[in-house]
Image 1 (cartoon, rainbow, N blue to C red):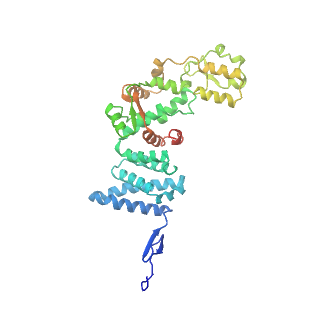
Image 2: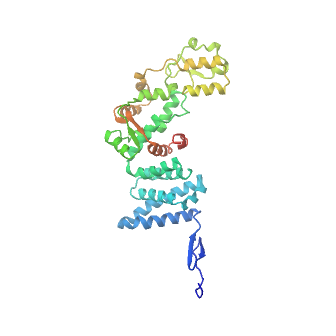
Image 3: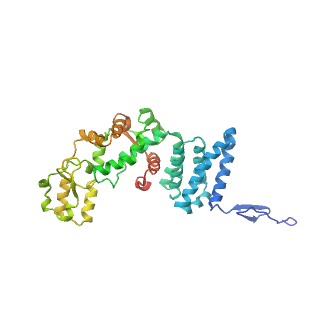
Length: 350
């Protein structure tokens, strides 16, 4: 290369290497400002230019999601900003921005941010990361009511709330995680078929799960009929074991065990170091008579009239034979996270 200059110029954040002429290698994006600039430039170059007069609106919506994402990541997982160097993450973020740009739906924007944030905690190419990638792609193809439908199915079919140890706590849990969904749920056959087409769920003609059966199976402790003091053998129970007995919520003249499930009761007995006799007696009370399945609906709607909508939308639609896929679960999980902590997605996808 005799007689040729080796003078170089390199932009900020880059390293220049001589190879006959300049070769510029960017060393990476690590700060919120760099992530923001990179994502904005990509979005403008590849999407906004196609929209003409709608450019300002699209850009504002996309930037809103970007800013919300960066703000959340800085608070909960700041080291994840390094993923801005990863082409797969760049593509996923761009997809989320495109989806946000197409609609002024704040609920959808919040859902996209939640899915993006959850993705930053997952290892590259792990099952959960792949599911979250697909969820961000799919969510633009389903409606708010279908997102609520997936969330409702996830609550009823999959979630088991450890906090439910009585009928009262069952009702309070429904208040938080079910009531907000019921105002806009899509249970029609066409809607559920579209969710199946989008890869969010499956329908089975051989399965029919009615709401009362599902609630009794998931939360047996909330529907105890209780036992009389004589039947419970209270006098021979140890003081520690008696701490788990309370007046029956459905019949105050009787007593019931304060536990949501048999597994929860067994754990409580171990924690209290109860002997075998106490444990078996409490198990017998817990597994005794329960409210008849035919009366579960009336018991529920007497205390919470809105639950009539739950029974109707479920039992009178194809939801009785619908199940969310991994993608449907991820979308439902992200949607329900705005109501409270329901545990990591890895509890259901692993």
